[in-house]
Image (cartoon, rainbow, N blue to C red):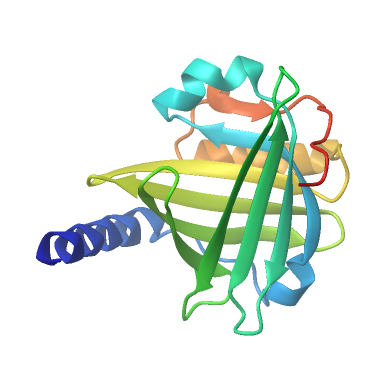
Amino acid sequence: MTNSLLRSLAALLCVLSVCADVTPAADFDVTRVNGRWYLVGFATNAPWFVTNKAGMKTGITVMVPTAEADLQVAHTHLNADGSCWRMSHLASKTATPGKFFFQSEAWGNDNDMIFTDVQYAEHAVVYNVKTKDGVSEVLNKLFSRTPEVGAAVTQRFQQFSLDQGVLADNIVMLPPNGECPEA
């Protein structure tokens, strides 16, 4: 119990230092992110991404606010073999609107998630810091209400990612993909 508490505290301190310069979108309204989004852009220097980015394609994310203003997030991705990868988590609100925290059971990491740029009917840029065993990785995601996003939004996402230290080669606009059947 004590080790778990210490690890969580260390992760929180690490996340706080990494996220200090990233602020949530002004006047963030969790109810307006409700619904279906396409994951169309991904940016991170994480080794797993560098190794796998060439085969990555667009996925679907459904975000549903809870009565407590937390955010239920469900991801699906159609794999090349026709199988579906699915993952969901409950992101807990923090004292700052637009900022959430969740622990990934699948990956065993703590996640600090910030909506940095949101046009609710069009796109959302989400800055995420994943921390595991005291090591933090920045991961930026670009979501769109449609399978494609405009050039201006793409450029803003790319610049934001560069500003966060992501290498240009590790900022990827994901190609289209099929969709998983309903579970």
